[in-house]
Image (cartoon, rainbow, N blue to C red; front, side, top):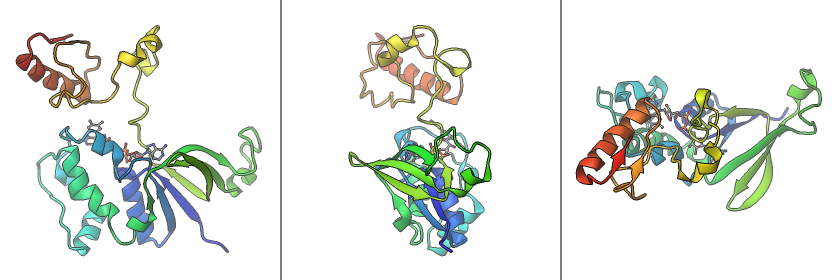
Length: 229
Ligand SMILES: Cc1cc2nc3c(=O)[nH]c(=O)nc-3n(C[C@H](O)[C@H](O)[C@H](O)COP(=O)(O)OP(=O)(O)OC[C@H]3O[C@@H](n4cnc5c(N)ncnc54)[C@H](O)[C@@H]3O)c2cc1C
């Protein structure tokens, strides 16, 4: 009987933790990651400090595996930045000898289906679960199909941020100003997008909203012609 092929979509903290478990169990897995390196999403907000300390950011499994490879992970109350989390935990996991060869970076998953079935075929029957997954991927502009028996979607939520309307759907008219809306936490301090001197409307009061408010406040003290509501 052929081995069960596991496709792990995404090499963020979740995908890498699953990879550790799969490697430990001796399973046949492949990690499909759209970024050029592991943990692309965390890297993109690398300038931000996490709200969880090192003691909460690494599992016992990850610590044990890295210790066995001669690498230690901080285990204290300091909150790392995203850059530090990638450098001191996620990149080392991705570099382990039994994980590194299984990560395909620069591989974006576009669509997934059951091979041989339309989405309306065999709904709820055993036949659907017996067929392999057919996965459309894109690598360097080329598209092709790969197959897997099990798919673990570890792609996170970063690329599906809430829209501005109530309950996270778009507010009326929001689509028409989509080009003016930044939906991820920008590095305001670096100000590559030219925030200084602009009128900025900040929407949201969660962790990211508060982080953005602090960064914008500093920007306003440096550039008093910047207005933030
Ligand atoms: C600014 C910020 C601060 C945060 N701080 C904390 C914190 O302090 N503590 C905490 O617990 N959580 C924090 N979070 C939440 C944090 O994102 C998650 O805890 C963690 O990153 C989730 O890991 P993940 O692997 O599930 O998803 P992600 O880290 O989002 O990883 C998903 C991976 O999948 C890849 N991917 C996505 N789509 C595709 C595709 N179609 N094909 C192939 N690959 C794909 C991405 O490139 C990425 O590498 C924070 C989030 C943000 C935005």
